[in-house]
Length: 329
Ligand SMILES: [Zn+2]
Image (cartoon, rainbow, N blue to C red; front, side, top):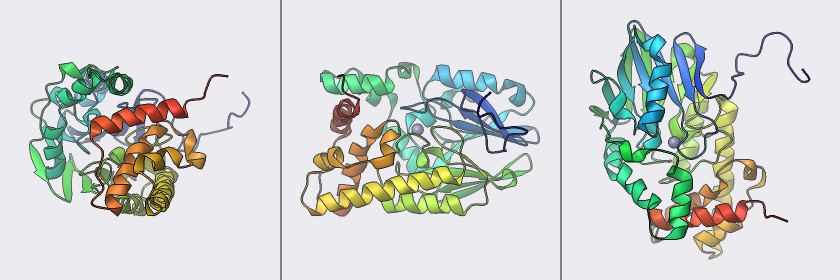
């Protein structure tokens, strides 16, 4: 086959297919292409007689499918620990399906935020009377059975960082937020030179800064790049390495600088979002998320800026997506 490398593939080469991908001794990523809205990744870390799950998925069907795919591993090494990296539903709505015996960990801030974004809130947008909001919310959440989600809150909360022992393995959790949400944790497995970043890293998809500040996100990228890791499992998109993290850093550096120029020139935040040339990042999926990120940057630059309501931001992202879509000739 043309272009097929000869001999062994480099260890970093992971195919971008749905399901479990073994990353090394007792470490797997669960990947959901194409990584767009709510199609998130998760992880499984296995020690002696026990496992730790990193995140659940957007609904019960997807989470059940993931847990079933892990059964040959978890039958003898059950999931006793779950870490939710952050509060977005695509990382915790499946929590109720982990075994009752499992203890769920999240930061204090993430646990609080989970109570603020229950499935009912997304369902409300999906069924909104406003056609623009309803259409975009359907696009984002329509494929998921969120009406079936009851939710299960964390059992244990922490702040800043947490050291866990999983059947003889050391697993380090660190909150590098607020950035994407009010709290964004990474899960670092030093012995496998692997980090699960949650939504601090998107690959081939546009990241979205719901909370910021952007400086925290840039610092988070630097912290991840300073880790002794070869493998980076992003919250969305294909498995990557530090280059994927550097791309996220480059995106936010670019968008922040461009937004700041416009803010200083008195341009409205929405107009700025539509006006910024994304350059090479325009090829990433879900470019409409710039609407939220620019609004967050404006709030950061001027505390008196009235940050948009989530419903309004969703409506505007829908407009941006239509604008960004190739026009029929
Ligand atoms: Zn996500």
